[in-house]
Image (cartoon, rainbow, N blue to C red; front, side, top):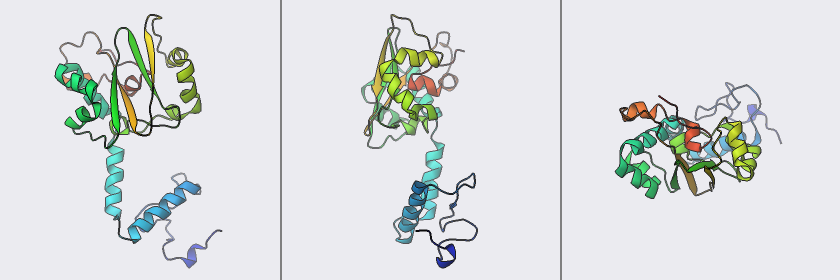
Length: 218
C-alpha cells in the first residue's frame, strides 16, 4: 500500500534518505521493489545503530574501487615471479591476499592457460564472479545465453568473442559457485621478456581473466 511522504519524517522532500542516498534511481524512474527494500533495510540498520552512514559510504567506495586492474596486477606478478605463480595456482586466495586483495571467505582458484589448454569461466546459476579482483561482472556474463551456451558449446561462444582456438587446444569450462570463484591466468604474450610488472599488467584484459579473450600484444 503506498504511503504519503508527508506523513513520515524519514521521507525527505529533496528525495534523499537520512543516510544521504536517493529514493529515486539515477534516471529519475521510480525505484524497483528490491531497491526500496535495500533502502528500508539500510535505514533500519542506521536507525538501530548497527551501522553509520559513513561506514556505508566507505564500503561503497571500497566496492567501487575494485576493478580488473587488481586481477591484472596479480597476473603480472605471476608472469614475473615463478614462486608467486606456484603459490597462486596452489591457493589463489592466499596469494591474492599477499598483494593486499582480500577474497574473504571465498575460495579462489586460478586456472592456467597453456599451449594445450584454454580455460573459460562461467556461473551457470547466477553471476558468481571474483569481484574483489575483477570488479563488477560485465552484463553479458550474467545473461542466460552466456551461462547456458558456454557449457554446451564453448568453442562457438568463444568464436563469437573473436577468439578462435586451434582444434588441438582443449577448452575447459569452470562453473563458479556461491563459495568458490575462478580466475584465468592467461599465457604471457610473446615478446614481453623485457617488460616490468606495471607494463605487463597493462596488457592483461578483463576478458583474458575470464577466458573469453587474450591479453594484448605489445
